[in-house]
Image 1: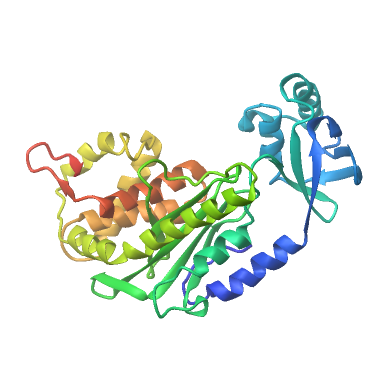
Image 2 (image 1 turned 60 degrees about the vertical axis):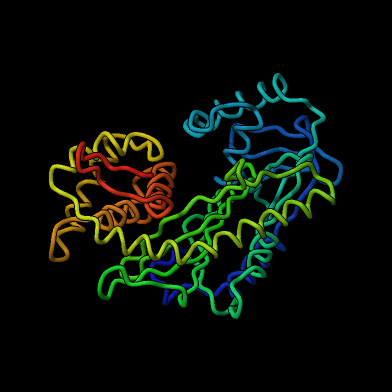
Length: 352
């Protein structure tokens, strides 16, 4: 699925839901066990299970789930050549996995796209998004909302933006707000508040938790657990929509929070700490982008420029790993979750 760069060309939530529904209806799911699977040296996956027999191509989306099934670190498994990958998988699956553990194998055509634990609730993306679409602000319909896609390859990461909910932190610089929903490869769902800067299509994400966790993990596969799972998605969605006015106020305040040039050096250490956890290489790119953002308007650099620098890299710098792009978007979101300022004494960035 193509990454949308502007809100104007983004599909409506109503249209996107139909796309998701068609995609999932074309996916077949079969119950298998680990002992039913064999990975061949040519990269195909052999399956001998009740109702399914044959060899299937393996999508790049399915490689991480094969690695986790065999308890092999995903990066190492991805770097193996096909022959070594097959030897490791076939040996370790039989050594480390309970052979009769039920698994769900998803096929699209003749290609394996996902393997999941059957003991946990299957969380279709359509069902998650449809639940969110029914929890929109009063007076808004799915056709009033736009969908920005960040990731659609194994992971799932989209933002649902309401153009009507917006602010203008700086003249002609409009930021709209909404809900971000992501699903990791293990099926856990995150529903968070989000902001989308129209002028350069940058996105930030504001964490939401229920006092315990940010992630809504898949529960045991029972009907009553499904209702609770969807209920938690509704609660997170309501909280996300409710944050937009607070985010708008904080962005305006960030634009009035000036930074001195001396603050840049203090940022090097601060951005490596919680909640950002950026490497020195990524921090350098943030500071370089901060200089560019500050040069595009009159006046000195502000914390809003830092917000823009982080969201720009988190949204557009595809050379960065997905982990760092996610940290940048969530890190920028921390600026509007807290009262952000630069301490006048130590010149450190403070989130209070």
